[in-house]
Length: 322
Length: 224
Image 1 (tube, rainbow over the protein chains, first blue to last red):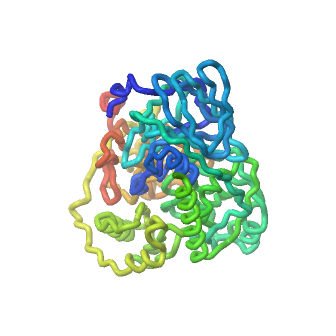
Image 2 (cartoon, rainbow over the protein chains, first blue to last red; image 1 turned 90 degrees about the vertical axis):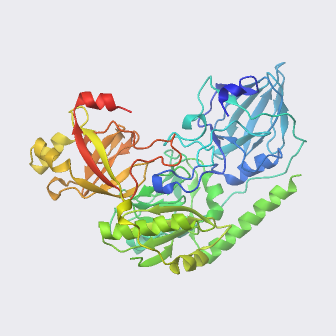
Image 3 (cartoon, chains in turn blue, orange; image 1 turned 60 degrees about the horizontal axis):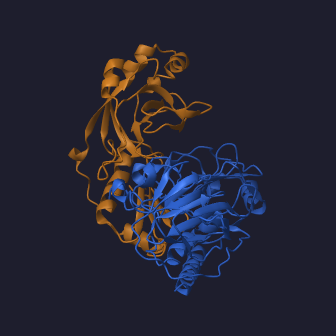
C-alpha cells in the first residue's frame, strides 16, 4: 500500500513527538546472521494487551513510547484507541475540555481531538494502539522500527515533530473493553550462568549476585548499562566476537555489566557472565535509570518453568478481555 | 567439527566448533548454518554464525533446549559445495579524506603508507561472518606485516563505507557507527540494501572479497 492512497483517511499530526516514539509489533526473526536484531515491543505483555483491548490481531502495528509520549491531533476520523502501561495521559477534546486518560480501557477519539501522553510512571515504556492498527511499513514480516539499520516503519526512524502518523483503514469502532491490570514489581532479575561464567573470579561472582546495581542513564532499546561494584575478570577481557541474544549480560574491561536489549548489536566480543531468563525480560525493560537491580541465579529447568508460568499468566489476562 | 553444545540462556543453543580461528573451522560453522537454514526446523527463530561458534535461538513456547539439542545432534549434514562461494570485487578509495588511520598505522608499523596499501589490496579475503550492524562483513586474513590492535579509544562515529583493519581481520562499516578499527579507506558501494529483501547483503559468510583501488573521481561516480 502506498502512503498517498491514505491521504484522505485518518491520521495524527505530531505536535510533540516525545522522547522515543516508534511503531512496533512482535519483532522480526531470522535476520541475526546479517546483523538485524529482533527489535519489536520491549514489554511484550503490555503490547499484546493493548491490541486485545481493541479486538485487533495480536501482532498489529502499535506505537511504543518511552518516558514522555507524543502530543498529537487526530484528523479526518473517529477511532477507538487504548493505552497500556503505567501512563499518565489526557484527551483534549476539540472544545478544549480535558478528559483524564485511564489505561487499560479503550476510548474514542474524534476528529480534532488531541491525545497528550504526558509520562510513564516508575516505568519506561507504554503502548498506544488504535483499532485496526497504525499504517506500518513491513520488512521481513515486521513493521518494527530499527533506528540503527533504518528499517521498518517511518523509514526506520523515531517520530519527529510535525510528522503525520497514518492509520490503517478503519470503518468501525471497538466495543468498550477494559481490564484491571497492574504491572507487577520485581524483586530480582533471574539469570542463568553465561557461557564465560568461569572467566570471573569467585569474588566477582559473589559480588555479582550479592550486590545491587544501578540502571545507568546510558540505557536505550539497544542495551541497559549498569553501575555498581566492579566485576573482576581473571581470564580475558575480550573474547573472539560471536553471536548475541537479548538478555545476555556482557562485562567489558571496565567491569560494568551491559544487558543486551531488543535492538542489540548481533555480534559482540565481551565475556558473558549471565543471561536474563525469558520470563523476566518484560519487567527488566521497564526498569528506569536510577532503579536498583539485583540478580538471582536459577537453573535451566526453573527458567523454563517460570516461562511457562509467564505464558499462562499472559494467556489468562488476554482471555479475561472479551 | 562441532565439539560441544551448551545453553545460552533459556532460549538459545551455543554450539562450539573449537578454539581455532581459521577458515577450516569457520567452513564447518557455515556448513551447519546453511544446512540448518534449509531444514527450517520448527521453533528456530535465528541462527548466528561467527568465527568458531553458532548460536541457534528458538521460541521457548514451541521447543526447549534439551529437545532441540537432541535434534541438532542427530543431524547429518552434507558438505557445502565449494563453487558456491562467490568472489566479490569491492572498490576502495584511499584518499587522505578517507584513510583516517593510515598515518598512525605507518608510524606504528614502521612501514611506508604505499607499502601498507600494496599489502592490503588485490588480495583475496574470506568472509567469516556478517553482523554487529546490518551487513557488516568480517573478512580475513590480512598479511601479517600490517596487523595492529584496535584503537585504544574507539571513535564515536566511523563514517559509512569505511574499511577498517585490526589484528588479522578487516571489515566494512555499512552504516555510520561507533567503532575502533583502523580505517584505511572507504568504499562507495552499498553493502546493505534494505530494498532487496531477498538478498539485502552484498557479502555473505563463505564469500571471498578483493579490494580494488579507485581514485576520488571514480569514487564519486560510483557513490551509492
